[in-house]
Length: 396
Ligand code: M7G
Image (cartoon, rainbow, N blue to C red; front, side):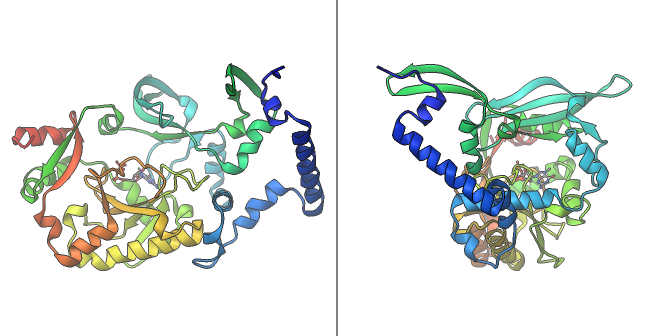
């Protein structure tokens, strides 16, 4: 006769399995008595620094994920100002680098959904914060279910929680779990105050490919980005250590060939599967890939070489498992390079937008004016003002 299906029933259906579970629990408790609490000991150990290319690079993904967790914890325990720590506890944002006023998430009211993706488990919201005078200030809120952390998965099945059987057919069944809060995190990214351009950026739109010649860049794109691109104050805040100073993974301080490597806003650093860092160059006049010449080769080679080494050392991910690229067009016109885990299908890593840094270096080594000669392709949404400029010029 078929046994009633519960998660517990699936975990332990036979006597043999029960025996194994009791044996594992016995070993677990013995080790706990001997070495203290396993779950707490591990990250502390993992947080220790290791030499480049050391044992960390050889570790299993679980150990590496653990190293990141240890690091994330070390960062969280770093010398943050008391006020910021308290605001973070309440889901608040501190004023950093002189930007927005402090606020908490509960101050924000949802106006509409800009875009959502069931596949990526992410929703982009247009929100607003109502001021004392009753006037609303726009915000963008991005809510994203965070990836599983391998070491927490056993808890998902073990910890007491609601598990509802939705469907059972032969050997197939589906449960809906309501995990405890520590196992059901949602990452919230807030842009506040948000400009119309931020809101447009996340609104779902029809997309077109543009083929831009160097002349198009000079006559259409450059005047446009000079007149209305996103503020890059956040970049200067990082370079000047006014923001995210405690998150810096590596810095080469040379004013012309140096850069700062930090975790990208999109990465919560809890797992390596979606590893994402950005290198921001110290030089301020290089807007994008379009303006690179052979003169920038030493800088680009430093970013490639030192960026790979720093990520290998800190996170144990070898250079051969990193996708290192520039966006064209970028959203922010201060030269920066993206470092993402090769296995992660990061937004903007598709062929119409991403240019591998190693290829960029080779192209410039062959021809200093490579990016001032060739046409470049990139996607633009139909509502973007730059798209309209290309339309007006009869280029679309
Ligand atoms: P981009 O190619 O200019 O545009 O990349 P994209 O956002 O359309 O990809 C800029 C990168 O900087 C993106 O990967 C952003 O997630 C990241 N980023 C943006 N901001 C505002 C911040 C920030 O304040 N801190 C950090 N660490 N990363 C940011």
